[in-house]
Image 1: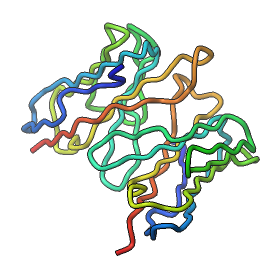
Image 2: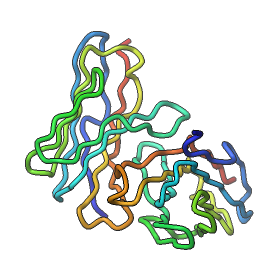
Image 3: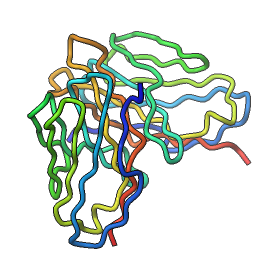
Length: 115
Length: 113
């Protein structure tokens, strides 16, 4: 199993440009998450999904949109990038409560710089 | 939002010594998780705790779920250089929709020069 994979690994955007980050998991997990990590800070939840076709806002959702069209994929979109969105983005996934451990498993991250 | 206070923020280790770090909260959690993150990588799960008072080991790592359910501790015994990294605690509230986790700010473990 590859676990959780993310593409791309690195990206540089200019202010106002748009992009989509892709997360894929092969563990048949119901739940998926997008976090951002800024220097000296922990992980902050942007959006999450409890199943195919569902999404919900996390702690810092502004400026981001997400879609979960397939169970194994979770996409994070930036419609108009801003320098404040320079960060490292992590995707994670976990089982549905009652069907497996609650732990979240993380991808390797996407380092995004907005100039 | 909810806050987890993780301490210390950073520490230096010397090979062979035991070190400890902890996480505290004003809220009650039903799950505590400990992760390690190395440079350029995503967090990797080390230990998961599900019951108050539970003590669980993973090699040289031992973690405990506090009996008040508001704290957790991680101990590393006989440190080695590859223990360097950032350790994060994470807690899950009982009512957390979608298995959402609250993360501490991390403890950065460095090697003494």
